Every structure is written in structure tokens, then in C-alpha cells.
Picture: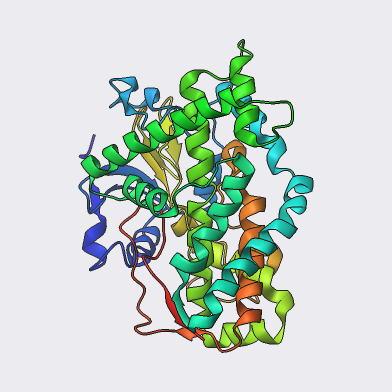
Length: 399
């Protein structure tokens, strides 16, 4: 058997965090599956082609539970509890069903007025200064406010919470990430106990509902699952949407012809959100998968228990699926654009996708309506965070 060849991602681009797409494109042109080494030194099998990625996301042999990894040695690999992204059916089915009712089309529609109100309040506060960092002033507090109200998290300190999530998601700083995870776990455990003490029949927030489900016993939520669910909903419920809003605004402001098209036809706003999701997805890769048996993808056999990364960012720029994929174009055929994989595919497709779409659509429309002369304030070069997600550290704007 020939020796396994490992592609060095850093060899394809000067700064992988700033531009992963050059490496993805170069590798994808040579085949949809490669064994790669990230700039951090970690290695994994990476699936880069659209059709192969879509199939892998729906393949039941590609397990999420780390106990299928050939590197697994203890349950200590779970950072905060145990959540839907870390389990497979039947546990995944049970956990997802407990919260799915909160993210139905009807429930999301009912949130529309509150999202608009929160956006307007933030814009009112921003307007007099004539300039602001969009992330600090708008993109971060908007989805955090919405998810905190949905979950029933009272008055969380935005700065503290932002620092925790940033450290947890930062690449290459395991000690800082672990400490932030511990601090957040303590906070969430205290919040859960508070929900248990204050539970009344009138309480309708999601965390109260999850606590009730846990306390009923039986085949519901374990202690670890309750903590993991709170963590996942709170972090995933805002962090990716922060990046979606900021990425979309940055793309429009650095593509003036696209911004002009949107201003001329505001009905294109939903297309703009979908194209931003395709072109610069806030989650560039799915969580690790571990084959329960050897799996052959496009002629390449991935060993059982190996670490697998499905590159959503690469798949979304596969020319076999999207014509001229390196071009940001909000006037693409909406049916084609919405086939992007930014929210994943299969049973782990993002439960909060409808809420993220609503928040981003209202945020873009409100921001552009309020500030018709909105421009970047300073250097247009993006300052990408060294994170597991794809997001900007800051986005200075003026109007």
C-alpha cells in the first residue's frame, strides 16, 4: 500500500485564516478528497467537492460521536456538556425533537416584530455618532438579544459572554479556550439551577422547558445533555448570525455594484443573504465526523475512526455546482443559491437556519434603509478572526 500523502494547507496560501479559498480551489481541482494538515498542525481527511460533501453530510456511517474516533480515550473530550452536534441517532433524534418546536416557521414568524424592534433600537443608538464598529454596535448584540430572550437568559453581560465565545472558538489556544469553557459551564449550571428554583406554570422560555424535561426523568435529558443543550443553543444561536450579518455587510460594501443593485431593488435582500451564506459561510466546515467503517468517497477510502472535515466553504465554491463561483453576485438564481451547504445537510441541518435568515434579512434591510450613504471607515481589508468560525474581528463603518 502506498504511503498516505498529506497536503499542507499553509503551502497554498500565505495566510490560511485570511484566504482559505486559494488552498481549497487548488486541492479541489486535483480531486474532491484529500488528507490535509492545517496550519495548527492537526490533520484530517477533508471533503471539498459539493456533491461529495452533500453526500457525506447525509451518510449515517459518518458519525458525530467522538467515541467513534480512533483517537478517543475518555469522555473528557466534551467541552461543555453533550449536545446535538456530538451525538448520533437515536440520541440526536431525541435531543433535536425537544427543541424543534421552538424553531418552526410559525414560531419564527412570531419573532419577526421583536427582531425588528431590537434592530431599530440598536440603530437608534448608533445613528448620532455617525460611525461605529458594526460588530460591537449591531451585529453582535442583535442576535444575542434575540436568543437570550428566547432561552430566558436574563441580562447576560455582553462583553463577558463575547469574550467567552471568542476564546472557546479560537484556534491554537487550547488553555485559554478550556478556561473560557469552564467559566461558561459554571455560569450555565448556575442559570439552570436558577430556572429550577423559579419555575412556574407561566414560564414559557426554552430553558425552563428543558429543565422541566430533565426533571421529569425517564428517557429525556441527562445532566450532561441539559448543560450541553444550553451551551449549544446560546452559542450557536448567536455567534454564527453575528458573522453572517457582518460578512454580508462587508461583502456588499466591497462590491459596490452589488450594493447598488440591492438599493435599486430592495426585494433582492433575501438573495443577498443567501449569496453571502454561499460565498462567505459563517461556519466554514462541519463538525468532525468519524467513519464507523471504512468509507470510500470519489475513489478515496477514508479509514474507520479517522477524523473527517466536510468543507462547507469549499463545497459552496465548487464550479461543478455554482457557475463562476468566485464571483459574489446577489442576482444569481435563488433556487440554485439556496442549495448552498452553509447550514449543512441531512439530519444535522442547522435547526436555527430560519431564525438566522430572518435576523440577517431584517438587519441588512434596516441598516441600509437607515444609512443610505453607509461606507467602510478606513482600510477595506478584512480582519478575520483566527476562529473555528468565519467572522471578522471588527467592521468600522461611517454614514
